[in-house]
Image (cartoon, rainbow, N blue to C red):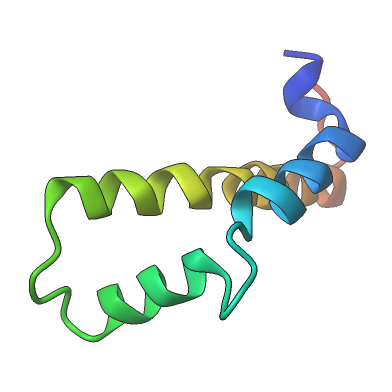
Length: 73
């Protein structure tokens, strides 16, 4: 549980895993754009890839919410 509450680790995950590959654009941006466009042609592999690259951002949002609420688990 301590790893999930470590700001440095979560930010590092967001900057590396969350945004990789960096060129020509971060991979997650393309997946979110594809999903917002109706997800035509997305397979289970694409949804898993979106979850894999998006999970660090979910952890970051969770930490921000916990910080705002001042709740510690």
